[in-house]
Image 1 (cartoon, rainbow, N blue to C red):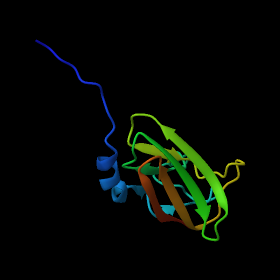
Image 2 (tube, rainbow, N blue to C red):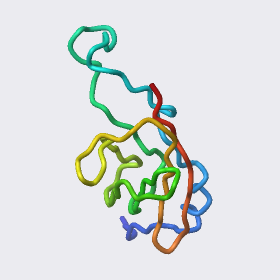
Image 3 (cartoon, rainbow, N blue to C red):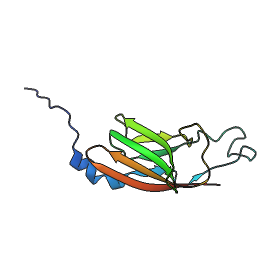
Image 4 (cartoon, rainbow, N blue to C red):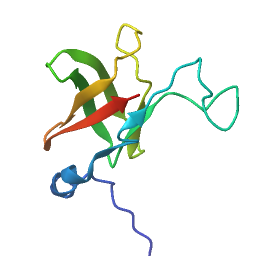
Length: 119
């Protein structure tokens, strides 16, 4: 006899792993287009940072160190990461500095952390 069980999300397991959420690369090292960007003279890759060890559903808010909301990422998929292109919600490039991220997990809790963008 073969039985199947409905898939469930266990909030207590998610709550235990909240502190495992992190950002890579941290710090993010920016560069100028006038400089040699890396191994090739054309591109070094996409400008992005990744939030890792995320649950299936969460909201990530990115703030300046003074508390200004820069961007919001809504995640609702089966991966454990989300990417951010280092642009504000208005499509503007962000400045160098320290940023705060807030991960809100519905019905579970939240994680607050920081990352840096340096030159």
